Length: 206
Image (cartoon, rainbow, N blue to C red):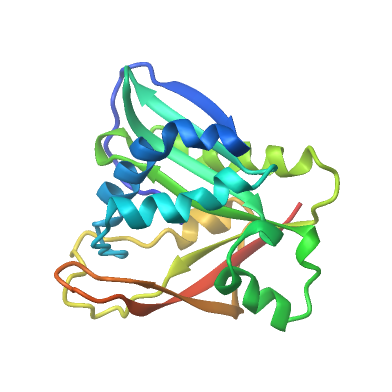
C-alpha cells in the first residue's frame, strides 16, 4: 500500500522505529491513522478501532516485524510496517503458497501512510528504503512484496484528480505480479458488512 500527493510541510518530522512487542505502545495511534488515510479512494475503508487493533496485533506477535512511525510533535502523521510473510495471515500467504514460493524467503510490506498535508516530501520513498534495509538485516530473505487494492477505472467514487501509484512503485524496482492475487474483506464507506476486495501483489528481489 502506498502514499501519494503533492502537498508538503516544512516542519521537522521525527521518525520512531518500533519492532515486535514494541508495537503495543503505538496501537491506538496507528489504528487511528490507518482509519483516517484509508477512508480515501481507492480503499474507501469504513474502519473500526476494534478491528484495527486485532489486525495490528499481527505485528505485536512477530519477532521480526518493524514499523517506522513519523511524528509532527506528539501527533502521528505517517507510518509504514513490515514483517516476514510467514507471520502474516492466510489470505496474504495463500497466493505465494499456491505459486510455489518459499514463504520463508519473502518479507511482506504492510501499509505506507501519510496524512495529506505531509505528502510529496520524500517519505514514501524512505518508507520503502527502511523496510528493505530491515529485511536485509536477517540475511535470509530474497523477495519483498506488498499488495494494493484494484478498483475499476469507472468507479463512481474515483476522484478526477486521482493518480495510481504504479509509476512510483515501478521506479523503485517493483513489478506488478498479476498472477499473485488475493482478497481482503472490509466495509466500504457507508456499508455495514465487509465485502471482498481484489488485491494484487507487487514484488522486488532483494
